[in-house]
Length: 162
Image 1 (cartoon, rainbow, N blue to C red):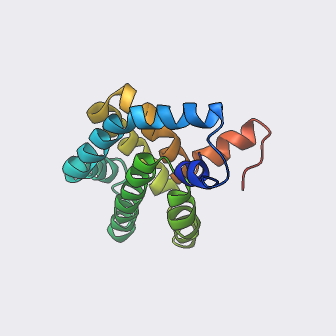
Image 2: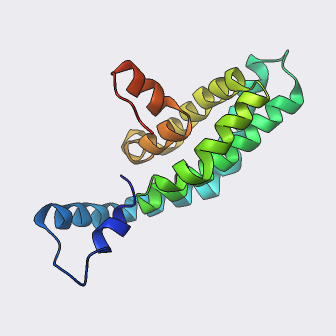
């Protein structure tokens, strides 16, 4: 899913699209209205989604430092925004290059991995409630990448990702 649109249009002056590239472009174009709707829903319901997840997090981890909980929620806001754009553009580089590296380091430095993991469970639950399973099929791979679950899954399957 890396830079789908870049790869499709990269060699335009040299050749026509191959049948598989044309098929992928057609699938992307046909899914664009749904992607736009998901993006709009995330934009319009961001506060509702994250407030519910933050409330659940606070109830589940009342002993945690409120500043760390707030830092985790702020990170989740950024994550959701990057994921929304990456899903819309069908380009996981947006998440890989602009979010994953620095946020995972920040999470580790502040010792927030457990907090983040708990928040992600609630966030994903709320997203499933609001978006539904069909929309989540488009958003979930990006969320998995941003939340570090892609690497965990790859390790379990004996694959290595960079």
